[in-house]
Image 1 (cartoon, helix red, strand yellow):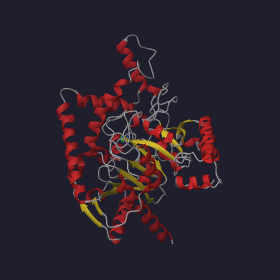
Image 2 (tube, helix red, strand yellow):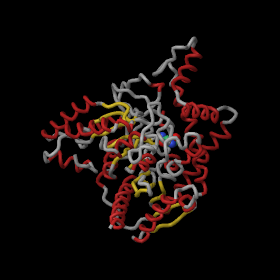
Image 3 (cartoon, rainbow, N blue to C red):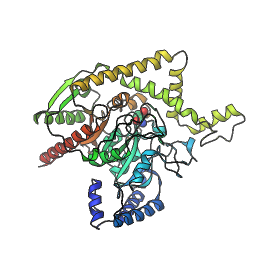
Image 4 (cartoon, rainbow, N blue to C red):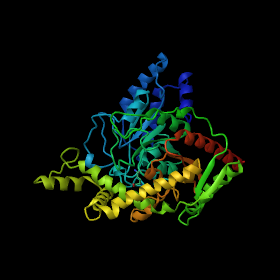
Length: 483
Ligand code: GLN
């Protein structure tokens, strides 16, 4: 089967009869089986996907098919699909089946997308390497000794390895963009409140966003367009109308682009990523765009702010997993207190336990003001600093990650090094702005590098338009250097 970069290409072939959804689904099922060692999927919905394919094929011939006919998608194990398992990579939800479907997923289904399975991720989306999943590690398809990134590691690898056309992940601090960068695919975090979180297992509710992982900017824009918009089940979703993101054309005209020199030039970044990022900035400048470096002194406080606030929210969100209402219940319990304690101790992995403890600590009476309140203040200051930035610029460009995908096991003993993997991605979640990660070449050993474009709040149209343009000039450059 030929490699399809966009859904439009698939739909052209479906329309002219050279391809059927059944063939597509069977192709992906074969790829999933053949690549089982990658451990990208934790559950494959074979029969259902085949049945859905027959139905969509019929709708195509009847002329009644939805806008996503031909899209075979995988969903991260934090998104609810009625009647299916949902465990956020955790043993605490080992037997849980979802009684309803997430709004975002339902909107895709309503347009005839086919869900092929549930994808591996870090437990409760806490991690940057997929090594925190209780369902096993996921391997990067470009080099099986490397991590895929996290927490949406299975979702990124599934697109990278052609096991499905697109995936849905969730991004609280970079979990869509960072694995997309590690796997050489496109990943988008929309503005906070653009897409309903109903049916997404909560990690840190004021940060969590659902986002697509795809092979093209065009497909990511289309998926966001279909998922976005108000939802009576989630009061934090914006009621702003949803533009036709899928119709935006390549950016034309001059863009004002800012970058933070001290982060790009920092010693912590791999020289190849630094060079690739600077090359893009030089190219943009040569094409007549305004490219300037700026200072953002508050950026150094981003990671502490992020980890204080997200662990606080997580400790509260995860209190519902008590052995009574959901999932795993310890058989050793003798009274109510030991039921809570044992069920939670048996059900949660180390990283999740650590974050619940940290979160409980920063919310405790004696430390609340010193940590939680202070971090909220810093969050507001970072937001203001970011707003001031966007008064002067259209886009903030940075690398997505300081290094390419690292070796499995390399950072598991060093949580600070692991947390540093998110240094460029957390800002968008702390402030709520949209950001996209697109491929930007590879390092010496062939591992993918990503580049990130952040746009003003709710200006996804602008972001997609510029990302398309950037993809185009990057491709042109790689072709020229190859010749
Ligand atoms: N790696 C970050 C964390 O562990 C981000 C996770 C995410 O975006 N879900 O918190």
